[in-house]
Length: 123
Image (tube, rainbow, N blue to C red; front, top):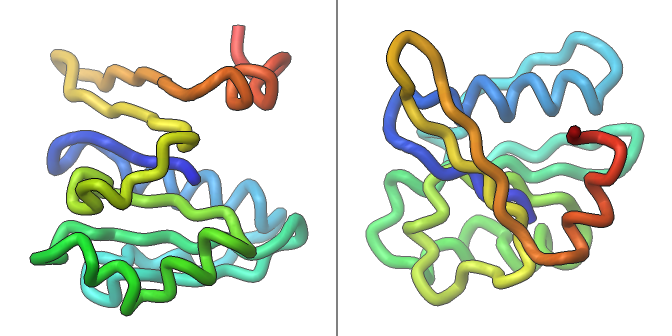
């Protein structure tokens, strides 16, 4: 589970699109899930579910989007994870996006398993 945290306009969706394009290995359409709330991609490495929870009014509504299926059989990339409340997974990687002057700031937080997964990818 990858949580994309940040304000409106901080580039969460742009980052998700870039990741999905890279994992697809080809140019595919990657619409924002703002209105559909979830988009599912069958990628060469396996399924990826891209959630946008901005419009959820209750955390439990995530179950109606197939959350349990995504959690058990796919990579889940989630925008607006604060809408999950107590359903937010403890073992997720959180990528924080922030507006910083004319650019963007990025932060990563996760457990030791994520640190091992990202060895060699990050400086």
